[in-house]
Image (cartoon, rainbow, N blue to C red; front, side, top):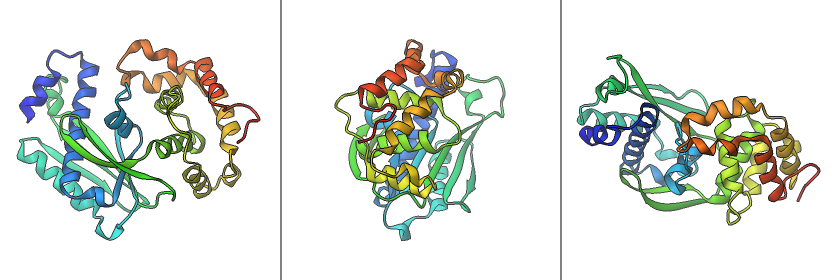
Length: 275
């Protein structure tokens, strides 16, 4: 399988090859979680879920999950050991860094020397990491679906539905201390599709309450708040954050202030607007 990865990145420009390598490793992690029965209790969400499920044209860094049901079966460390075992059997040099003392369990699956082996780095011992996060106390209200997709492996993924995915993205934009450009890109991608459903307002309200932002939990209050947040976004930083993940450099226009605000207005999200 490592030989297959080498063939996939061969001849690809370095930054694109790094993104492709990461995505291949993510797919193999997802395959391992699937084989361990993780979809009985975990739901995939976030930007990487968009990539695998809906082929959004940007690469993504983290694998994000919510512990939705059956918490008694959840063992983060055991899942990670299964991931390590699978990669080691294929001659990858893998180490784990795991943190389970916080509500969001975090891990880095670290591949030592892989970039050098693939011709992507002159440093023999350079480490490349795939980050995994599991929210063990997610806000209530997400709707979970199961979809079969093929991306380097055939995967049957339990994931938040489209409305819940959009709610999660809006919550991230409203509640994070800083604005991530990749979240802005995803928002434009969501809202520019007229067939994409409105956000799951129950999930969004619960996320706001959980974060202590109860003023945003009233029906439709997120609309004017999101518009105001985007109006004041640090646009140079927004582009810098996401540009290395774009499949097409030409898509940088999606991160321009007037593009973002215009898409929001098209979907009825603007100053003073509530449901």
